[in-house]
Amino acid sequence: MANTLPPTYDRNGRHPLSPEVDHDETARFNFLTNLNVHLGQRVSPGNRSAFEKRVRPKFKKETGKELETSQQVRDAMRTDPFYQCWAALRRNTMEQRQQAGRHVILRQLDDLVGEAKRYNDGKKTLEIDKNAEVPRYLAAVDNHCMPGSYYSEVVPDDILAGANYEAGVFVTTAGSMSSKGDGGGRSIVNFVKQKFPDFAPKRILDLGAGIGVNTLPLAAAFPDAEVVAVDAGAPMVRWGHARAQALGYDNVRFIHADGDALDLDPNSFDWVQTTMFWHETSTAAIYSMTKKVHDLMAPGGLFLNVEQPNFTPDTPLYDRFTRDWDSWYNNEPFWSKLHTMDVFEVMAKAGFDADKMFDGGTEADIERGQFQPWSSTVSRHKAESKDSGDAKHNAYKGERWYLFGGWK
Ligand SMILES: C[S@@+](CC[C@H](N)C(=O)[O-])C[C@H]1O[C@@H](n2cnc3c(N)ncnc32)[C@H](O)[C@@H]1O
Image (cartoon, rainbow, N blue to C red):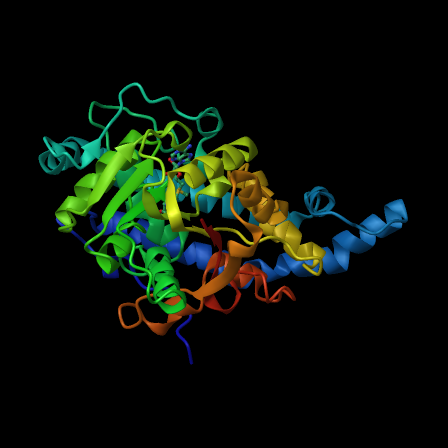
């Protein structure tokens, strides 16, 4: 029988820059990870029954109509005490995860800033633009309850947002992204190697790369390529560069820039990757940056994106509501637009040919053997959507990530 408990935080991979995580901090991370899983596996099924047994019949009785949209379900569910309890706890796990991560980093911030500087200073592979503007939509919200989001700086040469991101990704994903948190990147490499075995990119751009946790598997898979990781958050870029150096990667250049204002050679990249990026950008920015990407790509180049999949016409109403939840209550205001937006139309407007576009899924690469079998079977979203009838397009079902893209 599969283990029903997540791995423990101390099984997480470490590198020379990793912060010290003491006994109580480890216990806090473990508690939050398990609470996340418990809410997803054990408690959230009660929401479905609240919906079917109480909320939907009540709405019908009071209005004489059926619920039709996920927003209507949200408004109706808001009055149900069971759901209220789950939603408050769910939101709280994210807030606590941020505070727990920040606690670990803040108490040793001076040391970590100093260590990162040691890896960063004088390196041509790191570009920080003191005048770079934070995109307006990014500055508007503390993304997924992360105080100060990706870009705020509390000390000179700040790395807090980046180090906090890395420290807590285990909790947020309940250990399902492997011991280095790079399951996304390794899944992408598997997809590319299987689907396009002759593809040999010489220049790779990862847009919205964050700390590059999912960039490094690309650099490892194509060691002769020049890899460029771009992000709008200076603390993300500083930490990402230092981390990459500490892990021995010197073929990855980190650039701090708004993707919309990126000043790189046109027609020069054989592969542009985005991973869980578009759901953190505005609708206008998806259009403008996809156009930018098209301009930067070399003829014959690959554009590949890992994202939230669209709803399909047969996505059940309740599943629409659960999949939209993060937009409303997890400070992910642009999350749900990916459920309805036509990404093929976005690519077409940017200049991609319809007959060179594709989508698909890839198995999650969870680094079998590192964690117990549990980690391949559970994630919060997967647990919440496991009853879904939307097997084909639910990227979390059957351990699959959703990808879309096109060739130039
Ligand atoms: C959810 S994170 C994903 C990071 C990374 N791709 C990964 O897989 O871990 C989204 C990242 O997009 C960055 N971002 C958002 N808008 C951006 C923009 N206009 N230009 C560059 N980076 C941006 C944020 O700073 C953040 O680090």
